[in-house]
Image (cartoon, rainbow, N blue to C red; front, side, top):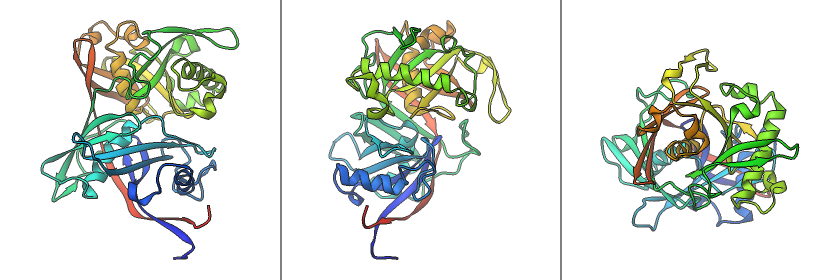
Amino acid sequence: MDNRCKAFKCSIIRGGTSKGLFLSENELPPVGDERDKIILRLLGSPDLRQIDGLGGANSLTSKICIIGPSEREDADVDYTFGQVSVDKPIIDWQGNCGNLSSAVGLFAINNNYVKASEPTTTVRVYNTNTSKIINVIVPVSNGYAISEGEHRIPGVPGTGAKIIMEFLDPEGGVTGKVLPTGNSADIVETKDGRKFNISVVDAVTPVVYIKAEELGLNGTELPIEIEKRTDILSMMEEIRCIAAEMIGLVDNRDVATEKSPAFPKVGFVTRAKGYVNPEGIYIDENDVDIVARLGSMQKMHRAYMIGGAVSTGAASRIPGTIIWDALKEEARKGKTLRIGHPYGSMKVDVDLNEDKITKVCVDRTARVLMDGIAYIPESI
């Protein structure tokens, strides 16, 4: 190999419906511009194709996870997540990726950050972005994390081993408050004078929820349909930017797309309805409690982000939110929320202690796709 290249030991891992580049913390320089330049070069950003890097030219596959040993008594590893812009030289470090949190468990076990035990190993993960603990419970055999199994999650072909994630004390992951505006719902006005009812709920990840009908949608539209509607995407982004200012992520909504492109997330919701998923399978309204679609980095998520699912689960237990109002009466009383996302139904379990959300559980699958060495030019 050309000795003018820099080399980095890394893994590419699918976690849930996302895929990212995983590196041990000691592979990178400290937090700062040099580290960001290396990561952008590794992923191949900025470039719409990311042709000269390891990114997948999509917000779901342009992600970085940095893992290192934790000095905390309640954690085994520290985990830092970065959302890498595809077409801009930007990395958003403000929040976490819930889907890739499941893959942190595999990486930690397979790289000896924790002692593996059978049949499952619980990896206590401290997410530095949100200052929250996630227990990732991973099936193990012969000292290694298992990827093969019979568990299926909508949005991922085939089956895999079931990984359980417990998001502990998830309220206020980014803003410090589960309702960062102080209200379960707010009314915002866009530049064209239209008014929208929204809820901003921060549990692991802050999400702005909009009523689908107020956007002129049925709510069951698939991501590819929405991405053909630039008017809808632009309106959702304007509302997201307003909310970013409201919750203090930016001082001015006009700079939110540049300064805080990944957080908050944004989406629209409607009551339980039947719809056909991208694979032509009919999702019955009786199999879901609500229908929701989420967007990230000014694009629609192809399935449903886990951080968003935790937020949606939390919102389903808070009277007056857009989510609460769309639920069937019986769905407001149970512990489990069934979210109808583009590919099907996702279950989220929410634990309450009086009015405080103490734990949210979601299951995923994950698989190591590649272990190896990544190279970038010496001069970047």
